[in-house]
Image (cartoon, rainbow, N blue to C red; front, side, top):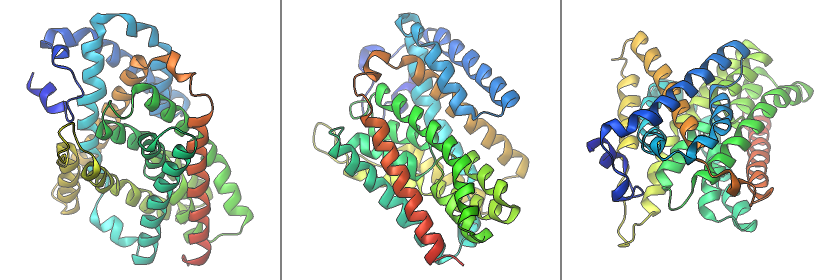
Length: 340
């Protein structure tokens, strides 16, 4: 009960859906098996773990009609997600951000802000609303599926539902994979230096693994720069979540405090920056974060109302595409004009 109350950040879980621990077992068992299967496919075929978790979850969507599974699925998609976000702080250190340099760092921050803004404008123009724009634009701007899950849990299910989140996860996965293949080719055609190419790839590709893959496919030097730039974007996740909560209000029109998982993210990143955590523990924490996020993606996909996914047509994908194009063009402009 205590875990559920802690997870119910914005009172999105009705009182009658809080259950005894035994009632979580069936749903969590399904999520565990789905996540393990996704991990097997990811390891053996080189596909992103979150993409495999999403596809397997959608394939198991028919299980959402079984009410015995709902408590466990809800717990995985909320509480496990929040702990995964906390552990993401282990991927970031202050030294990594400082190594980027002030000009490149300011460019990265500006690109993130303008990409989120473009997502909001595109969503409002397509009549999808500001909240969907924040979800789509923020996912493109920061770190793909991980950011999508974090933003969705911060906005709350009253503002973005599981159908919205599933659409963003599908669009982000497809566009990030496409970017990983096309952006290094574009960088070669433009004759970019390793520093310029690394910045372009790290500042514009959605998912962490694919940004790094594209960087190292260009060159070792570009891969190192892409890693620093991408992790700098990941570090912006917590400030963005904190800023969003400042503008959210509950039904009593009172401001909502910064979520505990954002504070946890900052705390772990700070401790990691001081070098107090052994490298083995940091590696295990990173793996645990990936596993928890994959479990949350699996549960969310199972719970998604697929019938609602088809009602919005191409508009959600167009929103993600607009933000993706803006991120690429801004990153390219910064690489050409400001990065040497």
